[in-house]
Length: 417
Image (cartoon, rainbow, N blue to C red; front, side, top):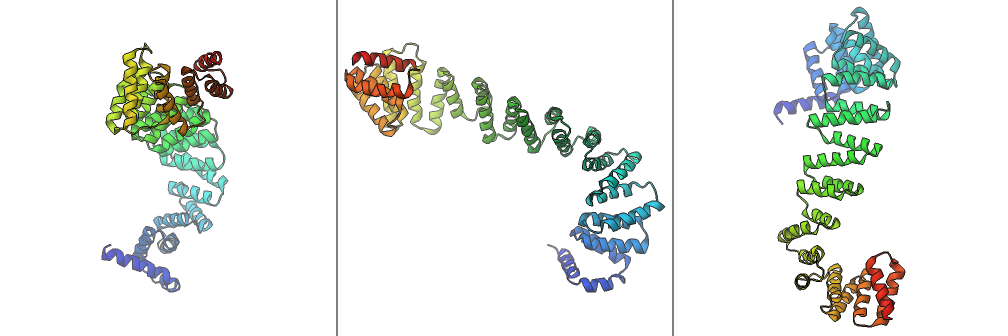
């Protein structure tokens, strides 16, 4: 901070701490010094003090600029409002039709909730001026008065000349809350968004309106625009959630293929839609990124699911080798243990080993019905029909007979018993 700034700060502090002395000396201070004090008080937002300074200056000089500054300080400090209104009205009687008076009287009246008087002044202002700033100012009176259509009409005229974001947000708030024009508000926001670089406030407002309209497509497109603009994963998550809500997995896949950033999500979506050949192209890339043995096991799953001939011996050997490699690298996820064990059992590669693998999976999830189904199928294959039946009955009692594989196993095991 420069010495001048330090001196000014000390001057202000001293002035505030010597109010009584200041009042006594006030009448002796020269016009030039009063002007300097007024500027300093304004700079430090000491509006009560600046009000007193400008009031004294106007009383001494009669210069209109000091009257207007006095009223502005009163407005900023929210004090002496009625006195400022009276002084402005007195001046206005001698100097009629001055825009500055209207521009000050409107917010002064609104500050003390004299809305009717504010609207009268607003009408006077509109008769004298079509400037955007005056239309904007006048609109506040009609808004306070509950004349939302009139306020919106004025703001729309301002927006046509000055298409500012802040103004648009005020308009759309009125349209949403008071004039029943929510869809028109959405159209205005969308048009503005497509023609300008906008802040997050516009997107947030759009999301709010789309949610009120229960317009999932609008929500989706807004989150897509946010993600494309910011590349923020929180928006990508919202995009995927919206696609899933719409049950449009292909749409989510197309978006992630166009904006590749989350190959892991894309991979899951490929699997969900049984696009196993596409998933196979991606799984090696995922493994190269993090060297997680999970992807080796996943490739084993994909090789089997993508095969047209599920009994192809070469394919089955390849699948088993991928599971064994993943296990060697430390992957003991029960999902893969179950898939591996069931393959050993169902394809009769090594049924006893398959049973052992499934039992290890059940240590992790002892009540998993799919794992119990696999174990029952293993016991069936070694002709231990009693164990197979007890396990399979538990599965059927829990899951019912909705899935083809459960029906097939249940019928076979009942005959075995």
